[in-house]
Length: 186
Ligand code: GRF
Image 1 (cartoon, rainbow, N blue to C red):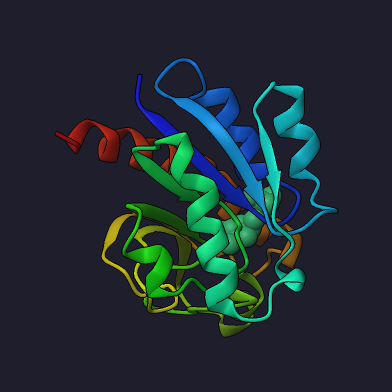
Image 2 (cartoon, rainbow, N blue to C red):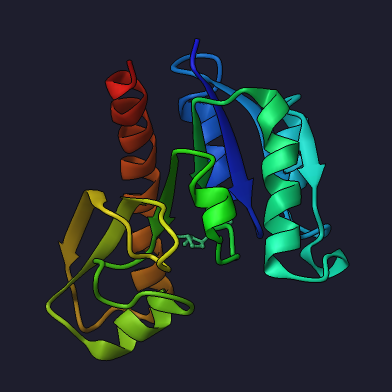
């Protein structure tokens, strides 16, 4: 079975969804890694008996030093793919040249790259919103788009309702994109 690592920084809703939809069925999540010692996702991974690694970025002098440790930590897991699921760190070429990686972003890229994408897209009141899975390169949220799904915005929605619609799309397209990607590997 193919092996993946999932990187996260927060509640781990996407991580939890990947555990439910993919783990031990489509692939093995062999490592769940976070830069945040207080991330809610840690308990979710442990509950599923997935090895958890905490690498607190504040303990590293530079972005490169953190990324070098990240690469060295992940290498022994021999993963086919790294999945960034709410991993709130910009990655350098040290990382991007070492692993094939996917990221989930809560907007219709190239619109609303970067932080607070949900809030910014909500405030923009555009006709459509959605989420995107893309390949990770060293440009923030800038790699090739491999899957995207949208919905028509309802201007009576609250921010919370809008967030739920994006979340539902994330939970649908991230597992699909991972399966497609793993199937395309030689
Ligand atoms: C998701 O909306 C993801 O797109 C964004 O951060 C959020 C992570 O949430 N980059 P969770 O930790 O998966 O619950």
